[in-house]
Image 1 (cartoon, rainbow, N blue to C red):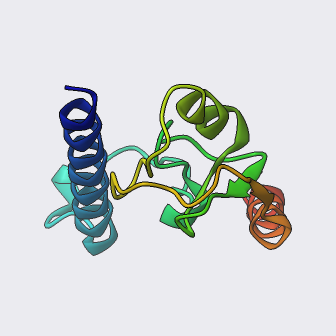
Image 2: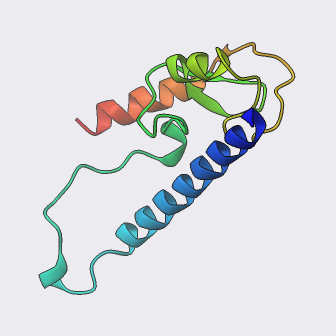
Length: 115
């Protein structure tokens, strides 16, 4: 049962990411007429700045054994009850979380440029 639930969650996360990418691609193409133009909005952060678990901008990104980066608090909560990748559903070789300093720096630069 737990494996099925994890697989369903992983599939839902992947589908959510796919839908989000499609929405962003549609926004990037812009409105088809001036009448449809939405009010100016803040620019969306790059997709790799978004935690796949929380779908929010990461402030403390860490890399898990699956090679994906997650917000530290979100992946720690995940790993408290599971030993699988939130992205693939496959077993993680270990639960060591490595700070992703390069990604954190890029996120901070993006935040500074979009204040």
